[in-house]
Image (cartoon, rainbow, N blue to C red; front, side, top):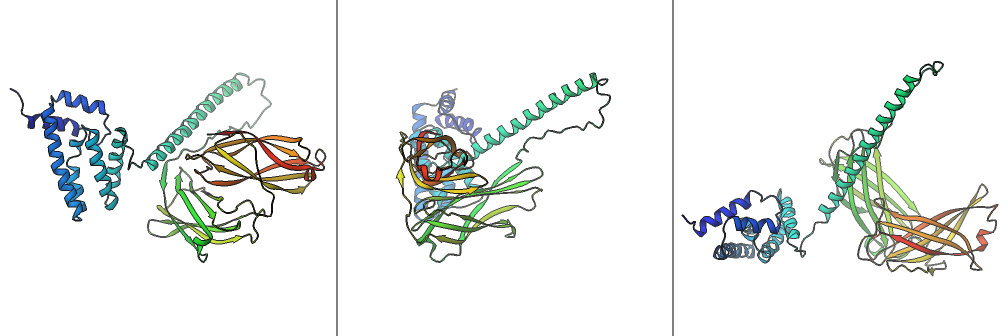
Amino acid sequence: MSKTSEQRIKIYLSKLSKYKNKVLKEKYIKDVIERSDISDSDIKNIEMHFSKVYDRAQQLERIGKLSDSLKELETVYLYSLHSKSIFASFFSLYNKLVKRIYSKGIERKLLHVSLQAREFGIISGVNLRDYDEAGKLKHRVLILLLNFILIAIVSLITYTVVLTFIIGHSEDLSGVRNIQETIVQGLPSVTRISDLIVEFANFVAKPYELYSVEVEDAKVLVFEYAHTYQLKAGVVSAKNPIKKISYGVTVYDDLGKSILNKVFEKTSNFSNQWSKGVYVPIDFTYNISKEIKGHPKKMVLNIILIEFFEEGDNFYNVNLETSSSIVNFKYLGSYFNEDFGIYEANSLIEVYNNLKDVIKDLEVEFAYIAKDGQIIRSLRRKLIAEPNSFLKPYSRQSFSLKTIFPKEIYPNIKEELSFIKILNVFTR
């Protein structure tokens, strides 16, 4: 006995509903359509039903009944999966409603729908940056855990081999006493990573006329017998070069009680280091060697004081020659510290990211050039190394290249040094 269109559609939806919480591939959906014996007329009936419900959801959205509109739209989620264009219409309205409604569990639903949209090749409106970053972090934690296990296995094998060797040659070691066992420990594995809500406060009058604060993220990493607070942020001057930044970091638990409060300071003696538009990184990492108590929820960055240089550029600037089209370099100058028979050269360079992507790894090979054009010394240094730092798209950041020059070898380095030159750039 042949089935009616309604019966075939019910079978099709029933098979899809078993995997409604999973991201379905287009090939799998086509297989379900074939196995359910869905005809072209059945597809038209599915689309007609979707259109009726979709129109009702739009009408409810227009009159302000957002929750009712969302509930109505969710009933036809499975009806939209057979066609990319229909699913795109579903996702557009769904995304629009979710952004205007907040309820428990709605973000998890939006994440699932966004992942399905990406599977269908839909890019507009899809924001999965936090999900992808969390996936990368889990991958790194897994690698760390595997490394720890590998270290433990190698240590155990080494200990067993050495112990066997010692027992087998006990006659030769009869004069040796009190041999203590050595325990090799690797890094502890992360048991939990939680994102913290980040807020920004300041005690500076009219702060937005002088500077801006950019907060990237904040986390608490919980280990078995310790925990770590991390904050990634930065300050950008809107006018004069920054001389000193005093800031505090406070962590609150879910009851609003302060569980950590620290004050820090960053100072530059060189006016060109943090000039207008240069990103001054505030990378806060604080380790506590005991178990965590309470539930950290919020981290507040307090800008207590910012001092600026009164003068503008007083230093000679020169663009550095480089074949790189990814980053531009500017030499800001050098200053020297003299102590214990050595010169410590602090050479400042400014780096500008030309890409629309974040640079997470940057290494340069550079040379100190004398006034006669001769190379005094060449070196290779890592400026940015993931995950400690990064350079955002179309942003500037300054770096200090510290190099030791022994006085016996370079007695006149302060007078001879003209500038530095970038020889090679390695980036990722």
